Length: 192
Image (cartoon, rainbow, N blue to C red):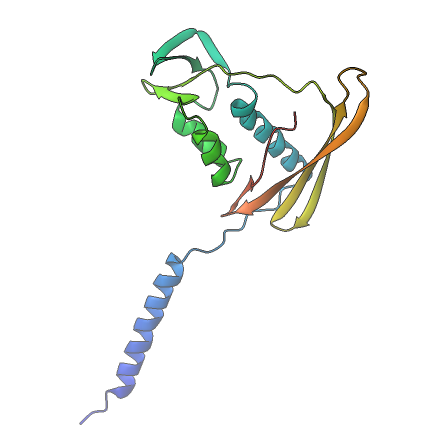
């Protein structure tokens, strides 16, 4: 009788190798993204300020000649080169911010949605507040803490409204980090 034990061991070894190979290709790995240089970080901050401002300070550019009423509110068609739908807006925000910030921005309206698709096109409700006039000059600093974490520090002068003199300064630290293979801000707010 022929001994088949070595052949079975080889077959089992090959089967295990294939299973391990398939499983390892399916397992989530932390994606690596190149560490951005200072120019890229400044550009990301500028884009994040603009996008966050669409919810906290102003509204995306709109065409006032094209309006529609939706749920009792007047909406205007958004005019943006790259953002034509609500899905485009969400995707743009996801390229700049962590998921919790995106959810906060898109879900902040209780009575109505600030942005919505009407007939497959993005529309917006005008809701501008303007900038805080008691905020003066800003200084910016980029601090590389680790290969996957950068602090974007903004220091803003506080101006006395009556005297128009600088009376204090506020410092904001925004964390820009590699989350799931892309660089996003994981905390953010308007500085004005």
